Image (cartoon, rainbow, N blue to C red; front, side, top):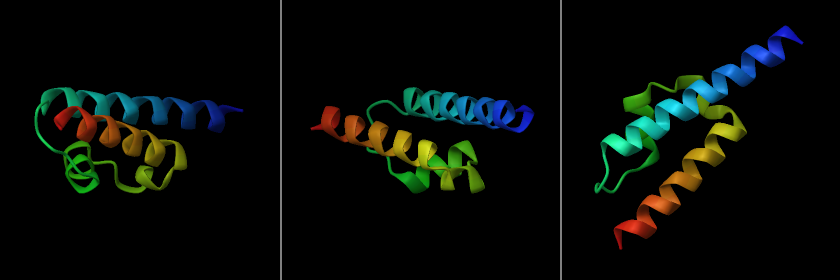
Length: 66
């Protein structure tokens, strides 16, 4: 139970960092590598929930750019 709660908190924290990074870089075309380097996701990027979140944000970012 404790590990699950800890993992959920970590995912939430990483998602917030990603959102903050995207907001800071508004107007730029971003990619996964850039987000990983700025947020320092590391192994967290292997988490399917984080991967899907980044994918969704990049799709919206690219759609808004065009």
